Image (tube, rainbow, N blue to C red; front, side, top):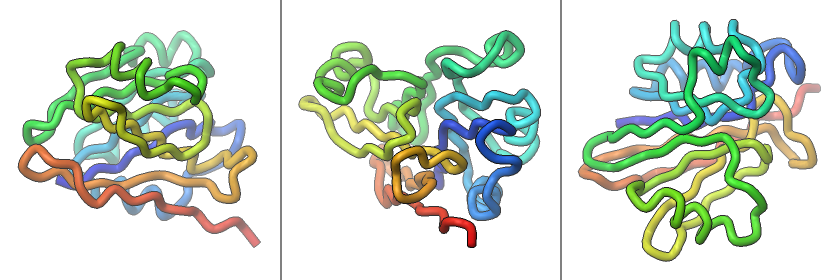
Length: 167
C-alpha cells in the first residue's frame, strides 16, 4: 500500500497551485494523509476528488468551513498498522515523549505545523513523521512531502521528496 503524506498546503495564500509532482503522487497513492492547514475549502475539495482515500485534519489556519468538515485528530489503520494524523505537536524538544504519552494506541503519527520535515521514533516505537510543506518552505531549503509503503503491518520506504525551486 502506497501512502502520500503532506501538510500545510496553505492555498491560495502561500502558493496559487499544488506542485505537479505532489498531484502525480496523489494519483499514484492508495491513501493520502494531510496534516492540516489547507486554508481553502477548494483545496480539500481537490484532494477529496483526486485521492483514492483521504485522511485529513484541520490546522490552526483553517477556518470554520474546514473545521466543520474535518477533525482535529484522525485515526486509521492500514494493513494492521495504526496511524494518527494531527496538525500540532508542540515544541520539538520533548516531542517524542509527549506524543508517545498522548497517542499510546498508535504506531505512526503524521503531523505538520512547523513546515520542517521530521522523522524520528519515540521510545516504545511510535514513529513521528512531518512531511514539511509542498508550497511554503519557510526557512527550509526546499518545499517537501513524503511517501511511504505499508505492508504486513510494517512501514517501509519512507521517502522525503524535495520540490525543486522555481527558476
